[in-house]
Image (cartoon, rainbow, N blue to C red):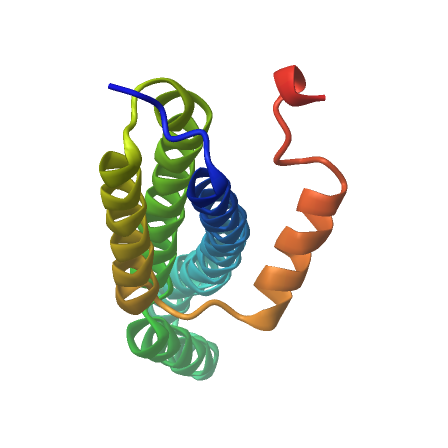
Length: 168
């Protein structure tokens, strides 16, 4: 099998590098969204548990006004948690982040090793088509992250957080 080694090979390599770049930005953005939604989960859940316990004690100690007030706060926190579903959102973003980084790794290996050493022209095009399809499917299936998640990811990437030591 003869490696491509031509102008189309360069275009395919460039497009694979774009896919890698898209994936690292999307993956890190999803991980940032995961972190944010996880914190919401704890900020709503932990106070709800603590205040619920205190409300129960207040009722047993004949402090119905305090118990009622705390129960109302617990109801609001629980309703917010039920409506927002921060745990589910966090898990969904974590899964998407993992999938984007997996795609980035696969595209990098294909670009740096398989494309140069083992692919003929048709195999290279087929490989690129597969990576493009996977990226498009991930973009469609993934939840939307906030601009702040993306901006934080971009700043981290520019600061070198996504670099491997071997690439420096």
